[in-house]
Image (cartoon, rainbow, N blue to C red; front, side, top):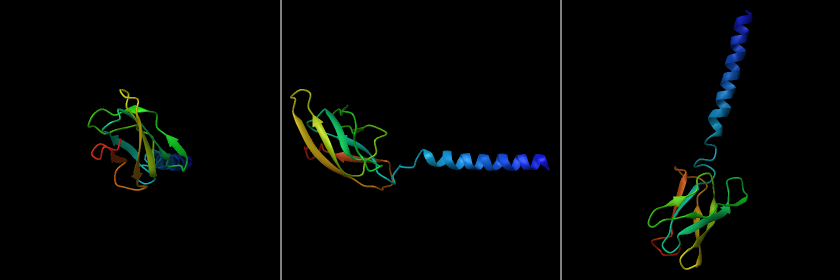
Length: 120
């Protein structure tokens, strides 16, 4: 009887742990903001600023965006309109563009194309 009680307690503890651990990793993925990747034309470094998944203002650190590729910083979740601050290290010129990030979508990344319209 005592052994059965111990097994019952252990099973309950294991199920509770699995429920908590299983839901922690992807709580924001695709349902409460997105991570942002950007392609640029003029700027070779950018940072993204806006409202994060917790409703607070946040910015990524400045990062390099080489050529035609999309680049982003993992772990920064945004929703709504974000400001994309561009910088060209050769000319010293700063540019500003905007991108609308949906709160919900099927994937975890929003791709902001600032290259084809030459905004950034």
